[in-house]
Every structure is written in structure tokens, then in C-alpha cells.
Image (cartoon, rainbow, N blue to C red; front, side, top):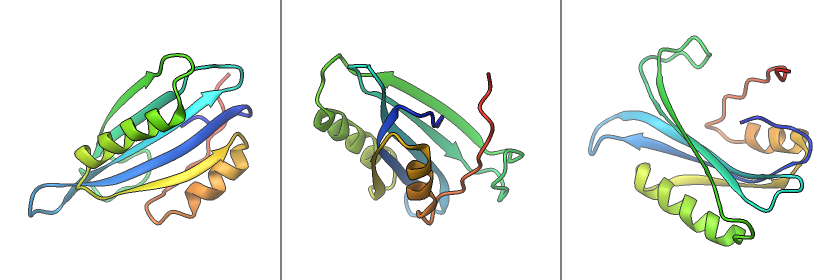
Length: 127
């Protein structure tokens, strides 16, 4: 997730992935946002499949990323409904939905850091 001023982030979603009756195998993380001046909502999410207990960038966990955008003017309620279905179906049935509703990177970081599942690493923006 790239946080830049003017990027309005509506929600962050998270869900644990399980094998039926088995251990945790990974998690899903996603966000819905709109950049200043745009009429479309963008969404990104990723699956992370655990390989080790390392929570740094050196982990050998496997990740797969997906992204998309809506039609111009599509209501946020429609986008939230879609994301809830994706996370309910993709996760173990339970997920966390964090309301952000801000374009201030400091607010986004503060709200995400409050979550027990969050392992936040800040990086300098690449030019």
C-alpha cells in the first residue's frame, strides 16, 4: 500500500486463511482507495501463504497480488459489498474491516498500526 497525500483510503481489510480443520496457512490483506481528482475507486489485495515465521521482507512467504478499478462514479457501497464477498469467500469466513476514510498518511498508519494483525514497515517513496 503506497500512502501519498491526496490518496483517500476508504477501508483496509484483513482475513486469516485456513485449511479446513487445519492450521493457519496465510492471510489476505486489501485496501480500497481513490486518488484526488479521480472518479474511479481502486482496490488492491494480496494473498500471503506462510513459509516461515519471519515478518520482515526477508521472509520466504509466497505472495500474490491483484488489483482493479471501478467504473467512474460507482458508489463506494457497491465496492465495499464486492470486497466483503471477496474476503468472506477467500478467508476463513471471518475478516477484519478497518474504516480509514482519510487521505492523511499519518491517520492511515495510526489506524492500521492499532490492528493486532498489522506489521507495518515504513519505506521512503521511490522517485
